[in-house]
Length: 194
Length: 112
Image 1 (cartoon, rainbow over the protein chains, first blue to last red):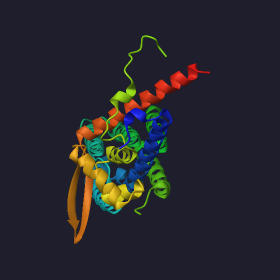
Image 2: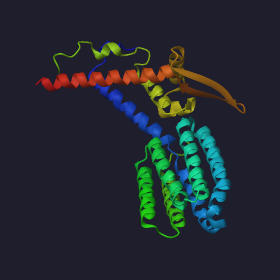
Image 3: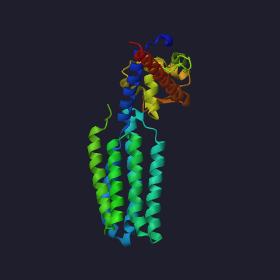
Image 4: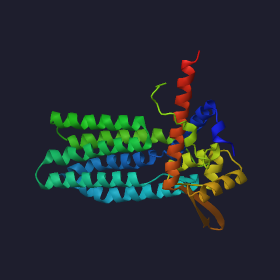
């Protein structure tokens, strides 16, 4: 083994550069948020007709069925991808964020509805989604995902302030279309198993 | 450089076990993930089977990584994960390397 005491500084600098490159490549290989965006973007678009059912409760019931299905699809996708690629991301931060997101969405959606606070029920869940996607963007080191999540969060706040009719459906359409589009684009940037 | 700076040379902090590019590379990959398999490490770090095996054995012996040998059907597969000690060793090593580069760069800036 080489003696550390003889390591020249150029060697240290080039070693650090090589490690940065290795880390960047590993992170790129681990990046796979496109699937979640496509699944939940599509489900969000599918949810828009349910806003008109049962006095607004229809969309909550839609997500009671759709959310577990979407998560099951994601778990299956990631298990297969990890096995094929040979590397698996640390899941804890993702699970905690997703759990908090589900709790916030159902809590704000149903809680706002039951307590007769329609603004909380309408704008709370999309705002929680925007915040959660900023966290996912940080976990994935994706500036474009963070940007889209911030734009959606800003749109939510703007619609809440403007008191627009059918704001829930407008937001569902905007979130669904933007996440689905970004997901399909991001798929092209994602590493496929070698 | 600050004249009051401690005289300790950063080189003294380098860890002989991991101060080697392949081992640093292995730990760098593993610190980004929950686990990686032998094939991924070999391809990503552009190593031979023998080279990777011997470096993994050294890291495992030092308690810096854990190996999990499994079978998928009849095909053997080795998953590798970094331990807490491995994470700390990599962070310490990078800090020492950065300090070394900073120190030498500071010296060279003063020298015409």
